[in-house]
Amino acid sequence: HVSESEPLMRFKTSVNITKGDLNSWRTGTDPCNGKWFGIYCQRGQTVSGIHITKLGLSGIIHVEDLKDLPNLRTIRLDNNLLSGPLPPFFKLHGLRSLLLSNNSFSGEIAADFFKDMLQLKRVFLDHNDFTGKIPTSLMQLTGLEELHLQGNQFSGEIPLLTDGNKNLKLLDLSNNNLEGEIPKSIAERNIVKMNFQGNQKLCGQPLNIICDDKPPALGKNPNEVTGKAVFMVILFLLIFLILVAIITRWKKKRQPEFRMLSKDHLSDTESVEVRMPDSVKKPVEASKKRSNADGSSKKGSTHHGKSGGGGGMGDIIMVNSEKGSFGLPDLMKAAAEVLGNGSLGSAYKAVMANGLSVVVKRIRDMNKLSRDAFDVELQRFGKLRHPNVLTPLAYHYRREEKLVVSEYMPKSSLLYVLHGDRGTFHSELTWSTRLKIIQGVALGMQFLHEEFASYELPHGNLKSSNVLLSETYEPLVSDYAFLPLLQPDNASQALFAFKSPEFAQNQQVSPKSDVYCLGVILLEIMTGKFPSQYLNNGKGGTDIIEWVQSSVAQHKEEELIDPEISSNTDSLQQMVELLRIGAVCIASNPDDRENMKEIVTRIERITI
Ligand SMILES: Nc1ncnc2c1ncn2[C@@H]1O[C@H](COP(=O)(O)OP(=O)(O)OP(=O)(O)O)[C@@H](O)[C@H]1O
Image (cartoon, protein in one colour):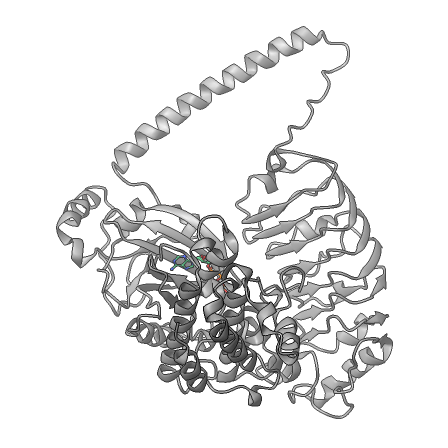
């Protein structure tokens, strides 16, 4: 694939760089040899991504050149100095992600600009100077998942979102000059995060601003019009109430006690079938009978069930029955709640009647393995037993998405406890609790490194949202060893280990990348700061790496300690030692990091 170096070299010569360089791009060498800065490759063979951020990039992007990279999926040129109209990226029909945040692009974007970019999933045009209307073709993309247009000067009304789009999870249109009513096609859609703030003339339900009624038709008596309107409203209300009453009675007849776990919550097209808990067999017998009577009595899957013969119903395969095996009726009766939407998919909590609360994690695009191979991996996860590792309970396999079910942890994640609601939990994070969490995470990681010693990344996605806390603040590491399950492109987008310096510099990851992630968590806990490294746009949070490296180099470790624990003067020495261990973990060169075992031994030695 040396031939792919040519379009990239042409790209290089057409742009200017003021902070850094692209000297690692050399004519005649393979862009996938791991040495080309900012070049990502699919299976190490063909260029799939260009990530050039924060290099003071300006000049002209000749999109024609990039057309010669047939597998290019991601263009990431955010935080640069690019300006002028949006280059004709519409020529790249295979693009999945276009990230151009924080540049100075300007002017209007043609309404049909995106009409041929049918693969687009993530569009970041935020914090530029775009004007004119939001292109209608953008809202017509059925695969669009994330759209950031905030901080521009887009005006006019928001175009309708196509009904065909079932994937939009994040929509940020804040701080523009948009006006009129937010279309119902958007307001009523189940979009996990929406932001419309900072648009003076925008109204509608998501903003809690009622749109002014249109004035009554000319020539008509306003009283007459109002009277008619009131009559119509009452009529509609009556019809609506009657319909609701009929539907409720009908539903009660069919499913006397089911509170359906909304299909949407688990899968777009299928329900999920699972088994009854052994531990609650007796009380559950009754519910089994009830479900038989309802005609919804499909048998639970066996441990090794494959397609399950469920007539379109997928199986839940139990991989760990320590908490009992649960059944479809249990999940159906459970109250469901969205917990969040991470880089791999979304998570829901379901509290079952027997008291067991589970988290159903819906993971998109985990398509690397066949059903059998996936089963082998998950069965293996299900056998893991360590006090600091969360063992999944069950999974569900469909081609398009996978569900992984785990026990719900009452205190939620370390991320939430550290940065979420400071009032409630943060004050409980005393020095001794923090040390216990760090040591627990370290032991969990050591266990995973032993269990998955042959894996390129034994964990791969260690970050504070994947450290869950028990009632007593015992940490449990979750979402581990996913790399073999993911397509390389998805892995490098979704897993935190791919944010390590070695991946940015030469597209390589190793078990030492997990050590880097452990360092970030350790430093996050000790400083109490949210690491900007967790964010994709680098905006917000604290650049914990830079801060720690410079403070440690100047022997000013104490200034790093979260003021909420630094008053604990008896332990300052131990805290400083921990920070130094963290600094070793985040060394830019993986060879300068100790391995997991050595790091854990050092962390274990710290006592209060
Ligand atoms: N077993 C669990 N118990 C309690 N809360 C959980 C559990 N699993 C996940 N959560 C919560 O749900 C949120 C969303 O989880 P999810 O794993 O989908 O996203 P993430 O960790 O932010 O990103 P990623 O997809 O990269 O793992 C987490 O921040 C966490 O607070």
